[in-house]
Length: 243
Image 1 (spheres, one colour):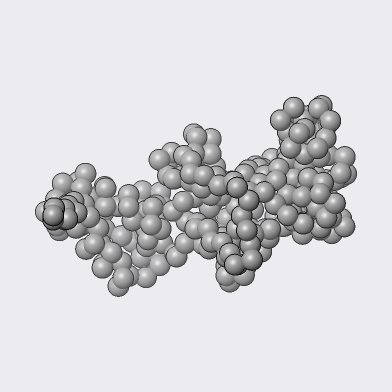
Image 2 (spheres, one colour; image 1 turned 60 degrees about the vertical axis):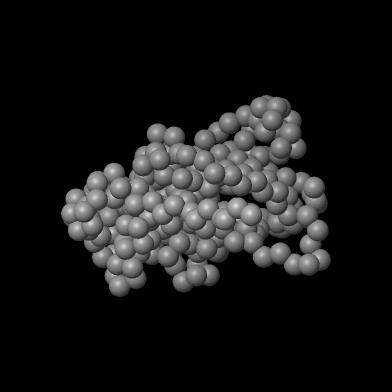
């Protein structure tokens, strides 16, 4: 019988364990030691420190603020549900904000027309916003809606508010959503809007929402920072996922 192979503990993992213990005694917003200081403290190469810090960034224990690294808040819990980002954040006692990137008038190409059940060439309005939590940029949301269904939306809707609440106020009920989620990396534009490095891992959520009559409400693309967000889902025994 072959003895099990013990997993090899890498040097950066040893350093990370030491840094985790350090973080346990620090407060949110406290400045974190610089790479050079950590390397000298533990007598390791700078690259070893960088690897440990990358893992801490991904875990959401620290975050970059310009050239400084500080202790981060716990990750935001975003439920996979029909509710909006605003509702989820406020339920955790945090402040949710939006930064307007822009409104765009478009026309539906064949794939989008099929998704939203409109004619090819139908007018589409696109709303793009940066999502913030307690002032920190955590996501980029792009929503496309049939223009004829939401007359005057770009003129009357306050982009800082919940779009879902606005849609409900027009007598439209969210009955179901179809979501797909995967990992991604931001492109140069997205990383600039979110003020992160292009190597920052992201969650990419694509959603199509449907109303009480089975008519598509929106097509939404949301890019969330993997170092600041985590997704949760509650399943019940009577829920049978379709294959």
